[in-house]
Image: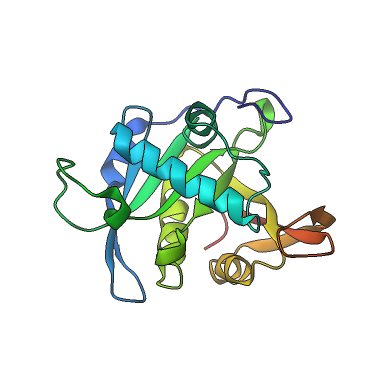
Length: 211
């Protein structure tokens, strides 16, 4: 799935840096032990299908992502798995044999370039926490993992283009991780349950200078 700039190639990176980081193990504020692992087109088909279902429900909710219509599985793969994607799992047996993914998956996110060519060192991230796993600290854990992973991939900074202002949890999360609000997009989205267009906040973080 192309962006407004067409297909974007990610910067070159040393894959050993990612391998040395993963899996990232964390304890959420609720005491849940989770691990962040990479997911890609070679991951188990049932896992990919489950992630697709989670993404479809988020689109149906219509309050946090700009997509209005459900993607089929191939479109989902092209969108979510196009560069680097990760899944947050409840820490259990690492074997995938007989895994019930609905019980293990508590979150998912991707990291991809926000701009092409000369600006491809600036990344974007997309984060999803399934409804039943919200308010447990999973989003914070994934955000912290993002700050480890994105620089390791080779990105210098990050821009989140459309953090809808009504998404208080997301806004507070990025502020808590020292992202800076660099602008707002008035009347950015037609969101489910809102009569008026909702504005979006643009968040930025420099990985080289920000702590």
